[in-house]
Amino acid sequence: MKYIVKLAFSILCGILILNSCSEPYAESIELEQFMFLSLSGAADGPIEQTISLDDPFTYPLSVSYGGTTNYNQGEITVNLTVDNTLVDRYNTENNTSYSPLPDGSWSLDKSSIAIPDGNRISDVATVIIEPSLVNFAHDYLLPVTIQSATGDKIPVNEVLKTTYIVIKGDVELLPFENLWAVHGSSSVWQEGFEVESVYDGNRSSFWHSALSGMPQWFAINMNGYKLIEGFSWINRQDPDQHALPKHVKFETSMDGTNWTEVLDVPELPASRTMQVLELPQKVVAKYFKVNVLSNWADAPYTYVADVSTWAGTKPTGEYDWEKSTWEVIDYKSEWNADWGVSKIFDGDKSTTWHSEPFDGSKNGMPQWFVVDMKKVRPAIKGFLIWNRQDDHGMEPKQVVFSVSEDNVNWTPVLDLTEMSNDYSKELDYKTTNPQAGRYLKVEVVSNWGNGAWTYFGEITTY
Image 1 (tube, rainbow, N blue to C red):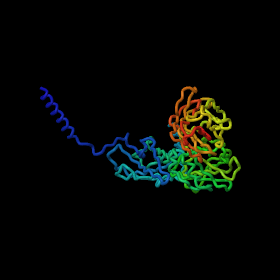
Image 2 (image 1 turned 180 degrees about the horizontal axis):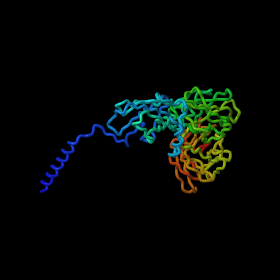
Image 3 (image 1 turned 30 degrees about the vertical axis):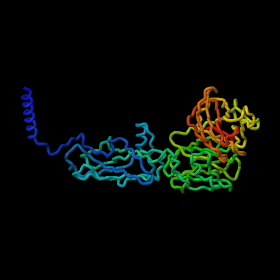
């Protein structure tokens, strides 16, 4: 029974199909409500384009119509224009903040295009943007619109007559210092103090100018277009060196030849923590130059440890650890007051803590001390260490750094199994387990000479 029903249904469908096929289609179909001229891309919303800053950018546009199978409507000529008055309206309606492209930075290779009789699509008009004439610290909106069209048969669709092109520069926010190169400098004192030190990520190294007088400068090729909203800055770390930059000017360039001043700092603080400098207006650049016009010691030279750029998220800077307020509250030994533990935190690498060398009840390893930092401090990121400067042999070897909130429960933040015994430079060790706390404990488990005493020059937290 089911087979008979299926067979009957199939026969009925076949009859209907044959009947419908016997009715010929019309030679042309015209649906006037769908017959209109529209600009390519207008129906897609804003068209985002991220463009290279090294080459002119081109974007093709055409006009077309539909709603008919009869394209013998006669030739239609369409006039195009860029209407920057539409930018403000677009921003208001869409809660955006695009800028219009500067005059002279864009062009249309032709303002008039045509749809030939018998066709539905016009020839192409090309938008051309010259990126060297645009400051890509901002995003731009280019509204291209149908200004007019000949013929009355195919009207212009008011909704689809404008294409909005969002133009962004192919710029980077991250500095990628490993790609940087020196573009020049006023001078370098001697080998080991080159400009490369300002972007090596090691605050213990630094550029040192020649002793030839002020001003001094250096320039960096970032090997890429960077959005710059400011600079981060770290001064030389040696506490007994005071020719830190005072009056500093920053310049940027797109080509390494033509420079624009972007920031003037008349009195850069003589701080040894990281400083975050913000530009009055963000810029895009491939090069930057640091001009040191004066220093805090009125010396004929200056120096800089680290400089970098930032954009997007503003660096938070570094915490002022207020070492001058710290108090040593416990220790295993110190030789005498002139060699006290407090010497480690006095900001002078030439003064020294020396543990007890002779008293058998106090000397020997390990040696340790505890410092009250007077309030809960944020997590320590690392330690800058100077070994003793005037005598050598018993420098600390294995050293454990711990932090506590109550001076009872301690958390190790760094265990150096073999701390360097190099006394000629500041050592930089990052913590492996950063913890916040009020109290700092340093334990010297062993020393390089296997003796009964040890010593430290200076320890700085960051």
